[in-house]
Image (cartoon, rainbow, N blue to C red; front, side, top):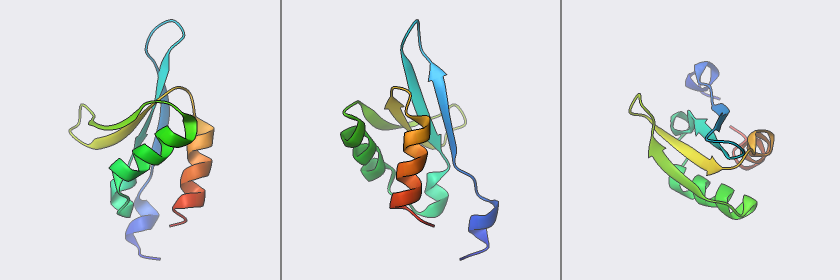
Length: 83
């Protein structure tokens, strides 16, 4: 594998919106040449929820999935994109 992949990290974090609602943010996939729109669609379809690509406050693209799917998203990403 390339040396660039060693220092790169993917961050998956759950953020509470209000009383019982939360969203899961996935950052850092663009370094691995992953198509964010296709991945957001894959996750939204798999979990039957809303999923989109948006900009975070730092100006980077990230995937936002409605609901708390942190562990499941990690498992799907590792299976779908082994690099």
